[in-house]
Image (tube, rainbow, N blue to C red; front, top):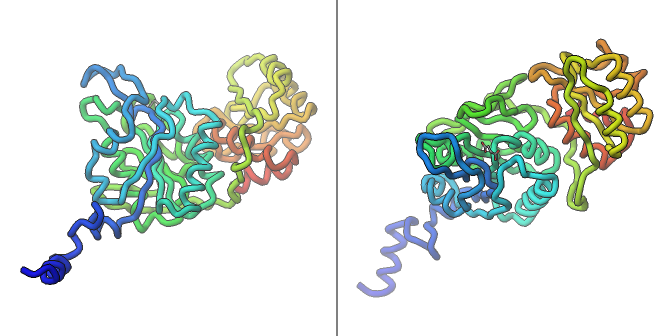
Length: 353
Ligand code: SIN
């Protein structure tokens, strides 16, 4: 066979012929970039059946090689941002992640991003990114409750599901989501609700946005996100905001400690509808008078904290968290304080998010 006949034949055989190491059909797949940060999904233990393991041990190459099916869904690239348990994720890591994602989309390096992350603080990273990444492309956080070495580990399936969500045409404009245990949750609504079980994530108020099952994605609803993204590219840190937890006979001196420590904001995880004792109210009012922004959130994981119910927020100068749990209220308050010190404006952000 002549050379030109060979070329025609290979064109006829079709587009499965490798082109520079990729097939043409691979070329038409969406591009998903994986940012690995550690957590149990990258954890390893000595025993198949015992719970003990160390988070953040397995490097990204090994994680991706363990799930070859992801390459049927997307053209995969990846990088290691960190390899730590999510209890060690800090604000610097959030800023690094957010800025890197922004850069990936601005430079058209990928169509979507998947972040492998420990589950303990995944909801916080997801919410932070949902408030700071300014792009329509999907960003999907995923983790595992069992380490990669465990019997019936959940990480491989969760990773495949996360890539499926990231690559799906239905996922345009979904923003930042968490994909865990077949569910897709919005960053704002999701929280971790079980310490060890594989069904550890829920969205108490509004349910999951959708499901991913058998390689297909189905969305049922999408939260309205009204807040414009906060710009973080020039930031190295965020204003300090502390969370305090309400309980029977809680000692208000803890608030004096926060004032001395120059905190800029306090989120109080109150009882019920964000309530606290008269003594705690005095301490928190003192903080407001010192210029500290005080947000009333709740230790209850369902419902909203509402303005002017049992507490005279207007008179005392408090802000309510609406449906944000304390850890997410802290994130919004830290970001709000990078823009404004105006209490009313900050309250609008909480009510409008
Ligand atoms: C972590 O959050 O890094 C440890 C727990 C987990 O990933 O499930």
